[in-house]
Length: 278
Ligand SMILES: [Zn+2]
Ligand SMILES: [Zn+2]
Image (cartoon, rainbow, N blue to C red; front, side, top):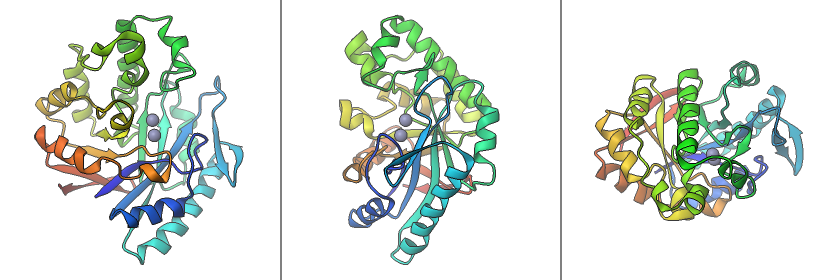
C-alpha cells in the first residue's frame, strides 16, 4: 500500500516529524510514502510559511532545498528498512502563480507535485474559520462554477502531477448549502474529467473525506463520470496532518476504486509516473 498525500509538522497546520511518519508507515505496513507539505504562495494571504523546528519561515526556494535535505536523509535511512520515501508538495493553486511557482521549484528535484484549489477570491473554502465569508456571498451554483473554473486553470497550467481532493467544497459547503452539494455533478463535469485525461494529470482519491464526512473525495457520482470519460491516472493519499491518520482507509479506497472499474494507481519518481496494479 502507498500513501501519496502527507503533511508533516513543516506544514503550519500539521504535526509529526518525518521520522514519526516513517515509523508509523513501517508499523502499518506501507511500502511507499510521499511527503507533500503545503506550499501556499498567495501574496494577499498570510499563510505562505513553512516550519522548521517550530519556527515559521516564509516560503522560498532555499526553504524547499532545506526541506529536501531532511526528506532525503529520511529516504536514505528508511530505505534500509524497506520503506520508500518520496519528496512531494501540495501547491495551493491560483491563476497567476505560474511564474513564482516556477522560480520556487527551480532545482528542487521534487518527485511529485499536487495541485489543489483551497482558495477562491483569496478566501480559503477549506477552512472552518474562513469558508463562511465566501459562502455567505455566493450561492451554491456560483461556488461550484467558480471552483471548477479554477480547477480548469490549474489543469491547463500544466504544472501539476495530480489534482487534490476534487470536491473539497463539500467539506464545509454541506453544512452551509445542504446535503445535495455532495451529489452535485454539474453537466460540465464530463468536460473536466476529459481535460484531466487529456492533460495527463492524475485524479487523486483522498481519504480525508472519510474522516470528515464518511465519503471519499471524489464522491461516487464524480467517480462514475471520471471512469466513463476514460480517466486512467489515479493517485491515492490520506491527506494526514498527524501520524495517526497515515494510511487511513487506503484499503477501503482501493475497493472503492475497483468498484468504479479502476485497477491501478500511480507513483512518481522525479515527476515521472509509473503505474502499479492494485
Ligand atoms: Zn489540500
Ligand atoms: Zn493536503
